[in-house]
Image (cartoon, rainbow, N blue to C red; front, top):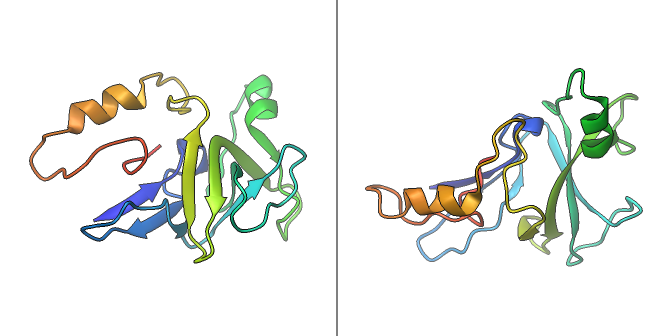
Length: 146
């Protein structure tokens, strides 16, 4: 089973981790073409082990067309990109870069999906999947898909 993490604003899957039976899975490592960073409040890179807001860059990072207020709130210039004009998406999730190179979620700032127009809660979503055949465990920690 795979743990796939990523918001719709970054083309859904941004990180992945292959789970084992006894695993409390991290959100994993970036998928090809994506970059993830833990940044502090001044948008400086944080070292391994320090929690910070997760930002996603690279292929598939979108934009809110016709929504300048949402753009200003959710996207910032990607100062780490090789090409000018690229953006980073602010996930609102507090994550930590682990010594093994993978990422773990520490907290979800809003507890809700940030996908435009959705507005359902992770708690209700994960509860709806518990007990379904073929679904071992559902929670916002290890079934994050958007």
